[in-house]
Amino acid sequence: MDRSPLVTLPPELTQPRARSEARFIMGVDGGATKTLAAVLDIADRRVHLGHGGPSNEDAVGAQAAVQALLGAADDALREAGVEERELAAAVLAIAGTDTDSVIANVHAAGNESWIVVNDVVGAWATATGAAQGVAVISGTGSNVFGVGPAGSWRAGGWGHVLGDEGSGYWLGVESIKAALCDREASGPATALSDALVSFFGAHRVEEVASRVYSQPLSKGEIAAFAVETARIAAAGDAVACELYVRGARELGRQVAAVIAETGLAEGRFPVGLIGSVFRAGAVFVDPLSAVIHEVAPHASVAPVEMAPVGGSLLLAARACGAGEDVQAAELSALLDGAMSAAAPPAQG
Image (cartoon, rainbow, N blue to C red; front, side, top):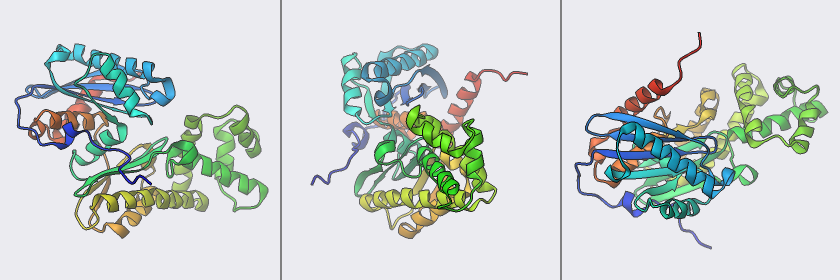
């Protein structure tokens, strides 16, 4: 059986580059619901943003995905007042299972020099500053990727049918199962049952089960219930708390595999937690940290604050030899400022 890494870094991101005087670089974060592009003016320390629709090929198809990516990129370039030829490097981190297909379409559109990677690579760069360490993603789905002295390795990321352990979707499904067990008296009573009925506007728990098959409820709709699971766990519900412990064990098993395969176990390195599910806080982060520290006692486990598109920008800086000029902490602040300025004003 093939034992090669499931995701590898392009040579442009692994081979040392001579330091350059690059001024403009671009990063793009493409997902199932939206696309965000950012052009960084290294000289002026300013970020210019562009927005687009979904760019996950699994969700919208290859042509629509590439149109969204290019549209967001054009938007950011226009905001920055620069042309594509002025970019020293561009890295696009996109969600989806067939990155090669998107690469082919991006290059066919005339952007041969742009580097396209899976979004888990961008997440790793966001989590670690593009240094050795591990990114753990838990949003609607879940995924783990790391880079260490032995190379790179990915675990998870198989989608909601075959994987996504410890994700919002997984928690949503397991919450529905727990409510059904409560309903039929084969499992313990839980506040998840009443919350499920209220959240989905149903009359009975079994009605929600029927909707899973008959409508059916979408992946996103099921994952959205994880917010309620977190609230109920925070209130002390034993069943909801146990779901987070189980999710942490499953996700932690994948993190452990990545740590082992990358040769990180004995060192000190960051494990960055990215995604909405980690907003549940200690009920999820603590048991996951415990699992990680069993195999890597010196790992530093913490949620990541930088916007995901920051990882693409860090990789672009590395690709053109400007890595020393773009530091993660400053970039995070620049992105926060640009995103705040671009946000619509609050309604009074």
